[in-house]
Amino acid sequence: MNPRDVDTDERPFVLVWELTQACDLACDHCRAEADPARHPDELTTREGKRLLDEAARFGDGQLVVLSGGDPLARTDATDLVEYGTRQGLRMTMTPSGTDSLDEAAVTELADAGLRRMALSIDGGTPASHDAFRGESGSFEATLRAARAARDAGLPLQINTTVCAETVDELPAIRDLVADLGAVLWSVFFLVPVGRGRVLDPVSSDRAESVMAWLHEVSESAPFGVKTTEAPHYRRVALQRAGRPDDAPDGDGIGRRLGITAGDGFAFVSHVGEIFPSGFLPEPAGNVRQDPLVETYRSDPLFRALRDRDALHGKCGACEFRGVCGGSRSRAYAHTGDALASDPLCAYEPDGYDGPLPGPSHG
Image (cartoon, rainbow, N blue to C red):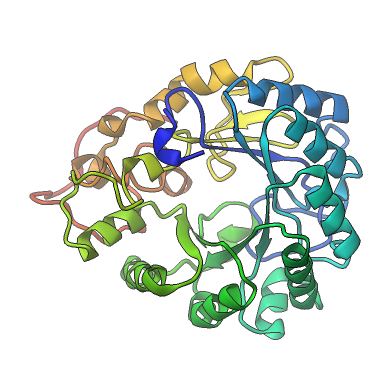
């Protein structure tokens, strides 16, 4: 499914279901503040299958990401992959790099129909990665799982968090992404939620230079590059390519690839809450009693997040808001207003000279 073909008023390009918050790792940046114990009120297998049935109502080929915590902390994870595949969903997963993610587990997921596996690498060496992940041996377990995915013919995505602690590791991680044969490098710019509140983000100027570097990487790397919670990467790419903000999106960095919280993206928590993103914890309902499809299409917050003209402050004045829009999650984390300016962006819009009035949306 081509993202440009998705009408994000009607369906998300990405639907994330947080199967569980249980995980054996204690990662420094963990949004879920995971611990080894499972929550007693998690969606059951039966409820989860109803959720997947509902997700299929969005249309053929809906992309579903099973996340956590560690989704493999649930014994029904593989069964859910198989069930979702039978419903016509494109099932993917972000398991944790632990010893439980062995070759047999990877092969079982591939045989169940998993379309892609995303693994996290946050350091270029075992010492740096394991320190960030809070578990000795996580780096080697992740590499073993990545090689098992390659051997099983399962496309691999590598996720990396950018913060002050990891930013200098990016060149070494880029080399690992290439060596592992990954199809995509997803670079996540820290949002201060969960345990990530205690980490130091990079400055807006440093973020700008990292995005320029990522664009250089994308021009020659054997894998794709995308950012998460940093949509101004598309503005940086357009500027570096010498293209105006309203240019056609034929090069893959235009509006229809502009997936942000609530606009092409939706998140269902382990207990069924519906959010625009896991990093924007403002609930719009719960799948136990609210239809997911109608909530995504009609909830006032979701609708506001899809209206780039509803943005205010610097983002509302920006001529690139149609292709960027800023991280709504970061704006919410810093101000409590999901439509405020993204504080990570260093760009000053033409003629902007201060905050602009606008409505406040929680």
